[in-house]
Image (cartoon, rainbow, N blue to C red; front, side, top):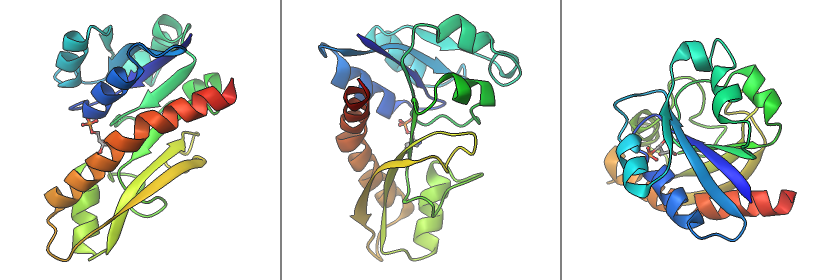
Length: 189
Ligand code: GRF
């Protein structure tokens, strides 16, 4: 059984979608959800879904290998689903081509520092982009610059608000993220 650990910092709708997709999966399971934010709604989702959850602090994640050594020893893949902290080098090295992130834009555009959540969709709308989308990629030490695994696009209408774009992007995320994670894990076996 391949074990997935999900990292999330906020609402966790993608984390919930992943847990549901892999429930009763023959060879892949989500065994833990980890967050840096004790107020994150993802913790409520984990409890409701019956998935172990952990809140960690910067000392244990960014400044030491406590999280890596305590919670990730049995893990095969790390999936970042709305996780806002940089992944430390030691974690990237421990999981070479085994950390998968989803970004709510068509990287390399609208990536990098500060480009997360509504900031991305605000920029897409204010720049009058005619399309946006999702990027699912491996995480390397340069974060949003890891190898792209998959992209999907959606049209942005001139009448779309950033919230409209966010809704379209979430639809793409829910449709594709679990399937691409499954595809990558099965292909690596
Ligand atoms: C998603 O838009 C994802 O692309 C980005 O952060 C957001 C997380 O949303 N990485 P949620 O917490 O899964 O609802």
